[in-house]
Amino acid sequence: MSSPEKKPFSVVSLVIDLVLTGIAFVIFYSLVNSHVQSNDPKMIMLWGGLCAGCLSGVFWLAWQMLKVVFKFQRESRK
Image (cartoon, rainbow, N blue to C red):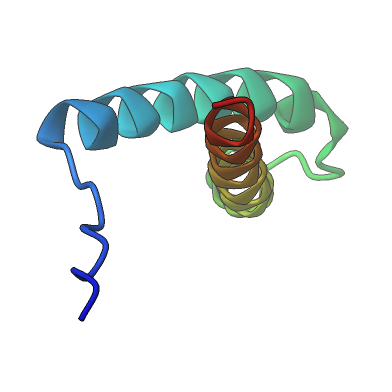
């Protein structure tokens, strides 16, 4: 019977992913903030934050897919 594959989980990897996603959020928020069509600062913060949150989620998913593909390519060379 073959041994089950271990799913690698690293706290360091999780922290790196969260830091990168946080940096992406700040970048997206600074870009999107000026495009909110309102004069109310609270509405600008709300809608800018919501949009930056969605974009950060897409960034996180793309980053995870990039890591999986890179790991697959690296293991297939062996």
